Image (cartoon, rainbow, N blue to C red; front, side, top):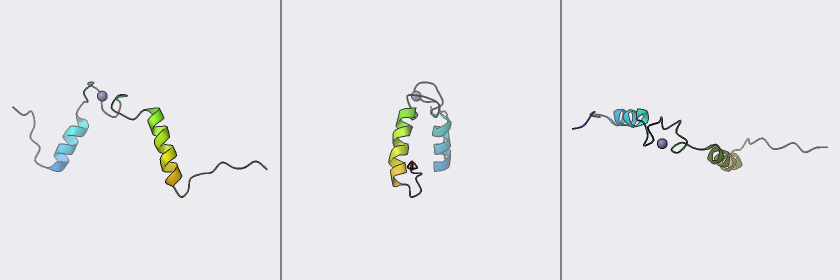
Length: 61
Ligand SMILES: [Zn+2]
């Protein structure tokens, strides 16, 4: 007995997006499901390496 019926992909996405995770938390706020600070930092490094305008450390004179 389905609790909801998704007619479109958008509805399905929204339903999944607003659904709580397995830990009964907002997936965006769940430390287990969301990205940890360490993971974000590592991604930032990886993406920063690819970014054309990555701010480089200024060399001291
Ligand atoms: Zn979770």
